[in-house]
Length: 434
Image (cartoon, rainbow, N blue to C red):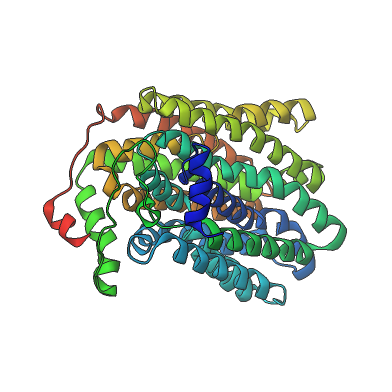
């Protein structure tokens, strides 16, 4: 069945085809979340097998986070020019090739090249920008809910993959876990090929909640102009305080989530005597709470002031990180941490996307959110390397966790500097570039 046939079947059941695209995108982001988060399970096994230091392994993971973020704005431009499906399939192929080749690695530079550069570039093409693109193209209504669902795929990726990867690694070594991820990437690629289309107009539909078909824009840019477009859009947005507040707070978001918890939490728990499978189960517990927290955040972002939502999200996250060292790493203490921390792990995404749309317009949301997400991943890279360096230098991760908690409280205050959201069209020079 082609996409038009599936769209017809869904239409007879009053289901918009956009939800099929959301499902395929959810699976893609879920699998790539597993690929991004998996190295956190492998830090200790790599140390034991190759004798590499935590700081050395963390340097590769920091490069991965940095490229994961920096690809975002350009991924948005590539999707606008070449189409979502083509770019996503290319990205999945890059990640599978990098991970598959890493099964043969024996040197540190190979880890940096494959898990740092290869996985960073590939997953960067399917980062949060993909979710923002699908939400804004396929939905005129319920964008916040859709963005919440797609953001929650990251949490679901942890829920599904990390405990399983930890178990596979404990019983059979890290290579079997990597092979499993490659197989799941293949499944995701098949689903994307069958279901994903670039825009509703491709199958003769208006976006969900709209009554008119939105024509597909004609893109005839040269490669040089295509690469220049995100830079021109950034130049226009960089003159506003709103951009820098969103960029700075999302930097702190990355600093306090994927770069710290996702990368180093299992090793941190190991320092306090917890087995990898147990620590991964705590991460999965966070994933459960974050799944519902992010869905709820999407619903709330359609109804309440997104600035105050972010104030509470960052504030509660900061307090939970400051509390973590005092849990004594008991089941009860870690359960409390997982609940409060997990509820707003990715919950910051829907309000941030909504604020980006309000301030800069829907047409440029995916590119500008790509730049804001780049700030998130620069923060993640900082934490991934910094926390590893802290453990190597001081034999403890705790200073990094205290610093991240304090930074979240700063982010809660920064977000209140934003004025009331209103659409702000960018200069005509940038419009011409797009």
